[in-house]
Image 1 (tube, rainbow, N blue to C red):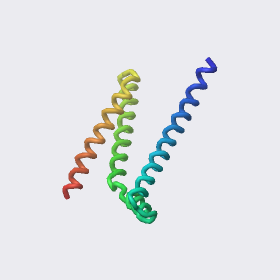
Image 2 (image 1 turned 60 degrees about the horizontal axis):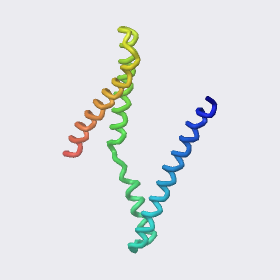
Image 3 (image 1 turned 45 degrees about the horizontal axis):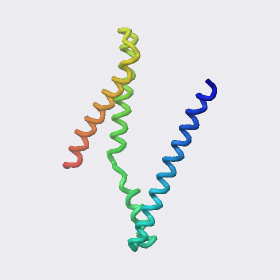
Length: 116
């Protein structure tokens, strides 16, 4: 049993390393392609600076609504478990339901903001 328990952390760190390495490699290839197309270092820096400055102002609203929905789902699940002895299997369903409702409400709000 001891050998199997060590596999999970090793797999986790290897996976994180592979993802990080792929990110670095992709970024490097992107920069090399920009240089080959004749962009200067200053132009490349300005492109990355503009991309970093274009953060979505509605992102905080989206994540806030998702976390509020998840919080409500957990509260409802605890209440159902205590009051009606519902099984714990209801928690994932409630979290998905309320998180999805949060995303739908976000979409409706964001759509109105974009139209304005």
